[in-house]
Length: 281
Length: 124
Image (cartoon, rainbow over all chains, first blue to last red; front, side, top):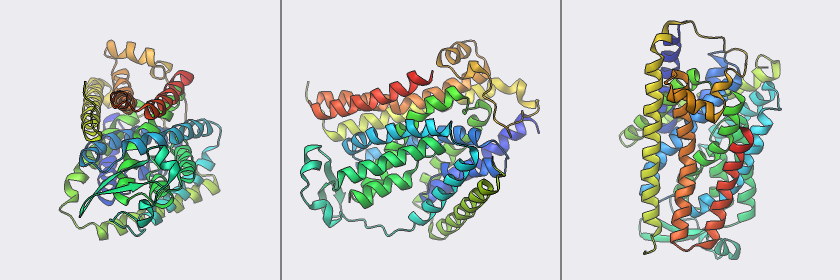
């Protein structure tokens, strides 16, 4: 295969992954690694490097729209980034120590979790718990206003240490697997800290770029980021994700979301199986 | 100097992210165009990992290569710029917190920036 054909094939695949990922809210990066490892037969380290770069691109690209809408909370994001960046450095360090087999197995489990988490009930209103006073959160200024249907509604974060701890885990997974680990970040903010769902998803997306940047330097110096692979993947995922956000308003995505979740579950099982049998090793 | 509100801070962050992503994508595309002579070569073997050209793994050498319009270095430089975009975002928020006289978040932001800087310094 020539470099041209290879790049075109990678670009097309990444375009589709980015498009479906942004349309369904599952993120494009999460399928890139299994597709590159399983179908393109690439060493998982190249796949992880290319994925991490595309995660930074889509996070920064999508954050433009979110930040302007006024849902994301810069202070909560910044505070939790302390946990995710330390976690990401730890994860990137682990990635150089752990064998490819284990990376494949952990990756598979995260894929399964992401697919399940995407079907959790989403409450658009500010949860009742977010209206309780919380001394620690108040001291740390982890509060804000949410543009609800009845005007601006104030909210305050709950269970701050738990959220912070889960964020460290999210950062570690991000650094280990080259993904945004948005599903785990949303878990920390939405489930643990009881923040409004929209605030959780947009702030999570906002944090993904900074988290990924913390492990990108380590990836780059180790040679995980191979320009010939990262170029078509990054451009494809970014273009696909931007197209997806344009399309989002018009399309009915429920069926598509089910289909994509099934694809992710299958990829997750295949990754675990490949790790266990040593086909990825 | 008046203190910017959270909303104003939001808007400047959005602008910075847009510039960063657009510029880095453009440079990566430029690198792809420069690569044209190499496009008909066979694809190297990526089934097994090998760290590859050291010139594409250190910041200084990437910048030097990009200035000579070496295609792969140009792509790598674009990716480096992309990686720098969220870091610049932290810096911008830091300026915002300083102007809001928010000492607590000035400290929190500095810690994040320090972790990011350390991750880069240690790896290169």
